Image 1: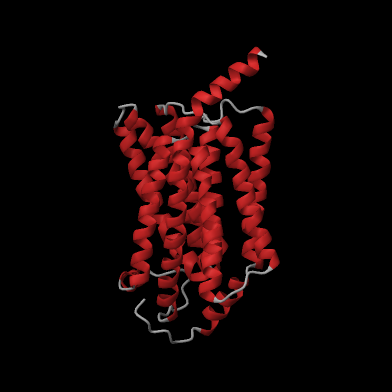
Image 2: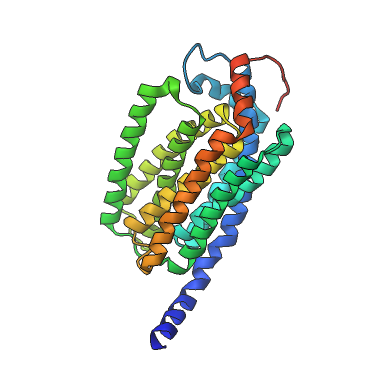
Length: 321
């Protein structure tokens, strides 16, 4: 009885700060969804009127054309607001609580994209979305009661930077070697992994600033964060060009938080108070969410339409948006 009472008191003391970031993160998820839809529209229009000359991936020369598309610019602004809200939520709540909440945007994006494109989601696509959102939702529910805010040490920063360095090398090598064979799911996975590190580095920098320990190592984290954002953004634009926006959002809102949460648990020790069954649940629900992403990549009706559009390269749709 005493242990239970002590545990309940501890949770009650932690709940107010942990839950403040949740509504902020949810609003950010809405902006993420709308931003993805607008950016996807801009990228697909540019893709239809340009030629890759046999090269895989969106070309840097096309960035000027993207900047001339109002839809892409609006989407970028909305995504910027989503990032600001995400960072604000991280200032209030542990990483493993608020980061997975972006999965809400997957549902919003799927509904919007189905209406805009006139593509009706089939039963397997709906099942995939349910697996993504359900897996992440269960993960957040458990994490909300297991997470702890802990100081970020210099050792934590060094470990994060080393792991990120290895990931950047591997992703860079894979992109150079298999660029022509990269498909939507490849770009989505790459972007999700990189943005998982972006969230972790952002949380680490915020924590270091709050601890008044802004040193050279923190500056290195900022530089690494910007590098991950740049490469991740490039992967995202390519993913928009080769797949439907809800697939892209599925990857970003499932792979991204799972990477960030794994780092939060393993390196930042945010789940120090988790019991054995909670740790097993983290793994189980994480696997469910990842299965949902791969299933969505295989069965989404929008994947066929993107493939047909890429093959046809049909001119048209000269609208300004």
